[in-house]
Amino acid sequence: DAGVIQSPRHEVTEMGQEVTLRCKPISGHDYLFWYRQTMMRGLELLIYFNNNVPIDDSGMPEDRFSAKMPNASFSTLKIQPSEPRDSAVYFCASSFWGGRDYGYTFGSGTRLTVV
Amino acid sequence: AQTVTQSQPEMSVQEAETVTLSCTYDTSESDYYLFWYKQPPSRQMILVIRQEAYKQQNATENRFSVNFQKAAKSFSLKISDSQLGDAAMYFCAYRSRNYGGSQGNLIFGKGTKLSVKP
Figure 1 (cartoon, helix red, strand yellow):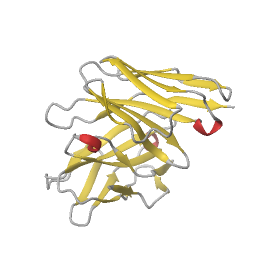
Figure 2 (cartoon, chains in turn brown, green):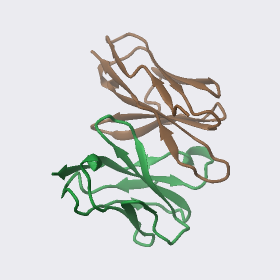
Figure 3 (cartoon, helix red, strand yellow):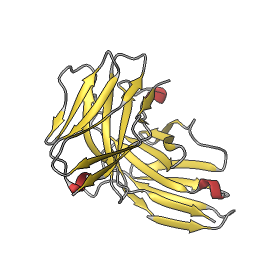
């Protein structure tokens, strides 16, 4: 199993540009989470999906952020337009419920820098 | 809302010694999970250990063990025989047992940076 795969690993973009972050969860996992990590705010949940359906997007900072999960093996987090304050590490994680908690598996994260 | 507090921003330990990282949490729920995650400089989040609140026995994973005090809402991590590779940020996290609605996500503390001295 290759684990949770995120791409790109690093992204540098100019303010105002559209940024798309990608995530491939572990096969068979039914939950997918997007987290953002900054020095000031730590790790905060942006949105999570269950069986490809968004369950809670209350952490999405504003309308510039959107996330999709078109199928069980792919999710995107899009920022349009990007701003310098969006600079952070974005993590994707997936998990399997199955009646008990088997723990989350995190991807390696995407470090986004908006200049 | 649940909160997780790690009161030690930084800790240091001598190689081969034992260190304990503190974590407290606040919740009105009776059933939940608690976790410790390790984040080395590579930034990969690695699950170290997990505890189910309904289990009174403290979890252990090799050199890592926890002291779970449910009444005190305390969940500390003990690392025995510390190794240079243990140097990392350590995050305590909480998750409700109920996966419904907004209860499925991990709530993280701010982290403790652990340094290991040779």
